[in-house]
Length: 225
Image (cartoon, rainbow, N blue to C red; front, side):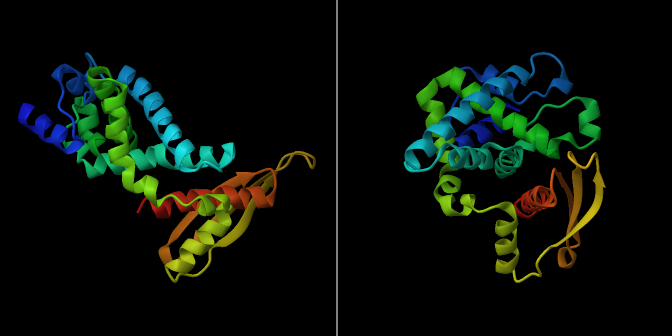
């Protein structure tokens, strides 16, 4: 197991002075004992700050809302799970018997939590400047690929442009339910892309907001492929 962890550390570009920290970071709560829940909490905060700082300097004219949307796109669970898969993190996780049987190694939430725990472990072992560099190295390509203009567009527009780029038909939006009092209604919308056999639902206080909510969900699915 030590050799396997050493391989992961080489991939991360960091060598631990205290190997117990990386072992704890890789231990899910289902395995009991000294698990990674507290490290996950700390790592989430560290990651958020490092990315926020990088975006603040990279986009000096962006508004607070724009910066928040950019940061969310980078630190969200789906992005962290993708990064975890790039490191084959599931192969290194220590899970309890129940999680092993249910395929926990491949679960996005567990992999994303594991990455956050690793960030905290590196911070505790090597300090802020070291984890800052590790995070920036890992997110380098994603940071460079960010386009402020794209993130100014609403989800429906971004979804339409993505589907057009793939030469696919535009999505269909259908109101499936309207509930609540006339002055406080909730709209439910079904968004489908027949060619991809994909459909998601969205909800909001107006049809437009429900469609935007559905488009956001569908974008997340498509960008996670």
